[in-house]
Amino acid sequence: MRKWYDKRMNVKAVILEILEDNAGKKVSGAELARRADASRNAVWKAINALAAEGYEIERSHTGYVLREDLSERGIVKYLTVPAGEIRVFDVVGSTNSEMKAAAAAGMPDRSIIAAARQTEGRGRYGRAFYSEKGTGVYFSILIRNIDFYRGKFLTAAAAVAVAESLEKLYGVSAQIKWVNDIYIGGKKCVGILTEAVTDLESGVIGYAVVGIGVNLKEPEGGFPKELQGVAGTPSDELPADAYNRAVAYTFNRFIELYDAFDRDALVKSYRSRFFLQGRTVGVMFDGKEAYTAVVKDVDENLNLVVVAEDGTERTLNYGEVTLKV
Image (cartoon, rainbow, N blue to C red; front, top):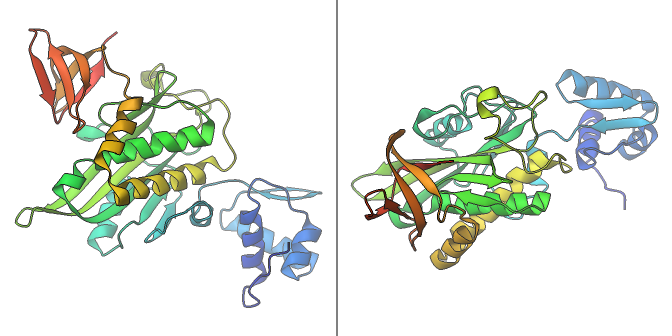
């Protein structure tokens, strides 16, 4: 069925909407002209104008294809729950930093900031997070006015949400490494960094920023040497419109988990993907290894239960672990 466009839209806006609706698919010049109610020459001028604005449009004598790049409209297309505001950048320093500045300026609850590339992507303790364009998608979600109890499970909810999203997108099995990494095929594909601003007097988290970096495609020439054998992607094949779908699917599921907030169900889903039981790990605090232990399990609050070298059982509610070979 033909989609009707607002007559107030100019030809370029209509052409862009048609191409975005058909991202990754070829649309002939004649079809664009017919649907935009414009001449072929007007279509050609609109395509040139869009290309000058940075849209990557493949052209041939049989038609035009808009590459399936990250975009606000591309994300919205897959949303099933409302978002406050969506901002998409080709490159930022860090989506978390960008979001914290936007939150301080009044950005609404449940907003998304996404980028195709980060120049200052970071993980826990300020460690750099590889964030090159074409390799993955990097995004932050803003959640306002939550209590400490629910806030304790934000990272876990994000981990489950992105794991389920990649399973849906790629048809793979995703695993969770405590506390905030997603592994597929034995390699890290996702990192999560949650940062919060808290009102100490009321005990309420003013807002939290949940940052998620997802590897979707191995970079040309492979990952940097220091990440080879560690970083990976869900598959060698990139699904259609993967960048936009990864953001939207994760946001949809994260908000569903947050709104329902069934702790038992969340813990069950997290534990079903937890893969460290019986593994020897280095227990780290503030980025430094403190001791070696064997992982026993995660408890009902998603604290990590380990048995240290001296035989004592310890429960960790913060810190991180590294796998020992």
